[in-house]
Amino acid sequence: MKAIYLKELKSYFQSMIGYIYLAFFTVAIGIYYIYYCVLNATTNFSYYVLGSVSTIFLITIPILTMKLISEEKRQKTDQLLFTAPVRTWEIIVGKYLASLTVFVISLLLIALFPLMLSLFGKVNWPMTASGFLGVFLFGAGLMAIGLLISCVTEHQMVAALLSFAIFIVMYLLPNITDMFPSSGIFTVVFLVILVLLLAWLFYSETKDIRIALISGVVPIGIIVGMYVWKSEIFDNGISNIVSWFSLLDRFNDFISGVLNASSVVYYVSFIVASLFIGTQILERRRWK
Image: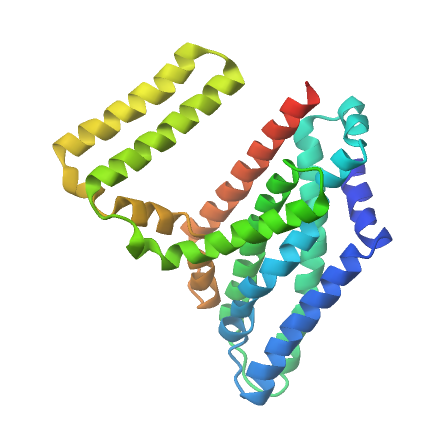
């Protein structure tokens, strides 16, 4: 895994991608810094400046992750990786850590801004630290999605555009939750569809009909039983589920100075789940 990590990290700076990303990200944050902290004389770096990175990530994260797996597939060098004495998860994790390293470098660069700001005013350092942690976790989560998308296409630009589109949808979801039906029966149908999809995934991976049936029938039975017992707990369920899965809402807590352990666990779990799915996709390609 170390060799994959170093090779991928080196590739960022052998091409222009690493430099373009670092320059664009730093300049974009610098513009927000000048506008809010210099022109508007605020020392709330976390809320105003770091809070703006969600918009910047729409462009920078797809650039950073678009080539991770897709470029290997396009050049057919993924076959060399598959024959190397490394496990599939090591390929995924090694590449992810390389992109994460470049991301951390960009955070270290913009950390100079609050340091400069502290020379001219009082900076709320606990809130700023919380904001940086939120930026790191939020960015790491989006990067895991970007890597996952890179696993399913051979073209860098397609991976970048797909990542951009999915990020847009994720950003908009919290704002359209009121459009989802509030009736509990719609929540039940939504959950049943999710369970059936998971059961199908279990079957496609294991080819064991018993496991698929158990993973489908048991959860559906529990869902239906709970609805019959107390249907009101399913009211507004779709909206609540969508809101719970929102990466952006938790990020907003961090930049506001609200450090929530459950949000940290959520981000880490989200990243692990995305990398696991990416590993399974690559594993299936490995044995085709």
